[in-house]
Length: 155
Length: 111
Length: 120
View 1 (cartoon, rainbow over the protein chains, first blue to last red):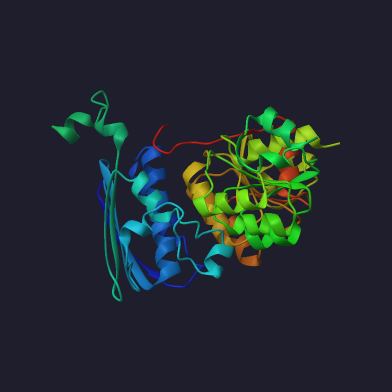
View 2 (view 1 turned 90 degrees about the horizontal axis):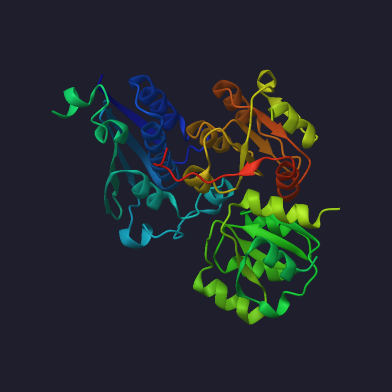
């Protein structure tokens, strides 16, 4: 079962922030992906969604998933990131007071996204926006030739 | 109970402020939102947090807190450490998460 | 212990999820930084926090947190309550500060937890 779906995210709309990630989590559970895969995908999706809401004017999250892996692309129109290496550093944050009061802005978002995905790509242009692509692999399946679906999936 | 006894009981690493370890600890506050800590923490309490930047030291100083305890093995930012050392405010590091650290300290000092 | 026991230990009020008081709980995570919760909290833990905005409920949902305990007498906003009801996540409120809340639960046998994601 393969799923491809696209979601819009509105910048500044903290009330709705997280809707997309919850929806994606539901879809991944329905596909039957294992707990660890679903959790990691939900976390990286949520962190990227919060980033769009916190820093951009608007954005999109595109999901492509099947029983092998989950790919999440998060793209936005916004100020972009001037120094990606710095932004990826744990603890570095440009969050506003409002964002911090909500419990975010600790400077862990991008590094969490990288840590919990199996493949991570980010590019950004100042004054234009940011694009992140993350892949979370179903390691239960990939690393386990005894799994009933392994043969049909990997050979 | 004094800070030194708490350090020993929880196996905390002392990063600075050794001279102030004989201070009596009256209670604790757990929080990562500085505005909340400023509003609600009390003098002589230990502050249990994950915030590592130098504003933490300013708040600890402002409220005359007994020490800052960073949890989950988090280390203070260099500027924070420098500032704390200058002001004689102990920064302690705990390997465990906040719930455990708070729980243990509460059980040591609560009536 | 059950959520009902937790309610007793913390003299707490249950605001959402009265039907879930029989739920078993063993671990707890205290935090105001949601990124920390995302990175470290164990699924099915209690989440102890001073935050009351809807994002706390979202974070709890993403992680399958068993219940949210709001401390220092904090109450969730209408919006937060509605979301919690929708996602079926219990919310309790206690007058104790986070330090004392952690202490009381720790004394009663609840343990802290860190789960490194990717290591089920």
